[in-house]
Image (cartoon, rainbow, N blue to C red; front, side, top):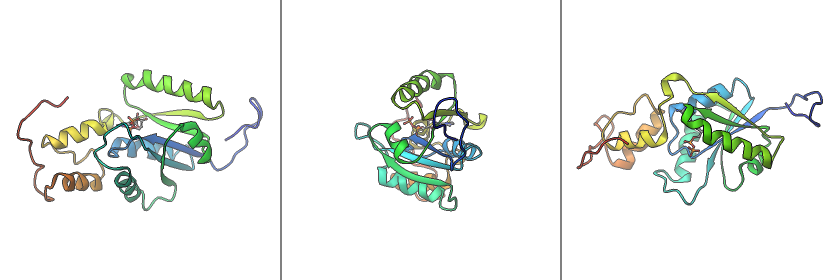
Length: 188
Ligand code: ADP
C-alpha cells in the first residue's frame, strides 16, 4: 500500500518490505520473521548490513551465500547487501516498509528509537514489527555462535546450512560434536 498524500485512499501495489540486519549468521528466529512477513508483504528483501566496524564470524559474501541458499526455492525473498542509510536503501529497493522482529521488551527501546529516527528521515516508510515465535524468542546470532563455540548443539536453532558452515569454520566433521574449547567459560 502507498499513499500519494497523507490521508488519501491507499493504492494497492506490489508490496515490498526490507528486513535489515547483520545475519551473522541467519537463525530460525530470522526465518520465522521472514515467513510471517510474507503473510503481510508480497516480497521480503533480506538486507545484510555491510558494517566495517563489526568483526563478523562470516564475511558478507558468506552470509549472502547462506541466506540465498536458505531461500533458493522462494522467489518472494530477495537477498541483498546495503550500507549507509537504511531508509535510502529501502527507497532504492522499492520497499514501503522496514520489517523488524521483536523478541522481548529488551529489544523494544532500541527498536523504538530506530523506528522514530527512520520515520523522521523518511516519513513514507513505515517500520513494521512482528513478534517472534515463542520458541525462538531467546535466539540471537550472538548466542548461537557462543553456544556452538562452547560445544553446544544449535541444531533446531538455525537452518541446516548454517550448522554445516559453523562446523566448516571450526574444522569439525559432520556428525561429530562441535570441538569444545580448551578453557570452558560461561555462556554470556
Ligand atoms: P542486528 O545486527 O540489528 O542485531 P540481526 O541480524 O541480529 O541484526 O537482527 C535483524 C532483525 O531480526 C532484528 O529486527 C532483530 O530484532 C530480529 N531478530 C533477530 N533474532 C530474532 C528472533 N529470534 N526472533 C525474532 N526476531 C529476531
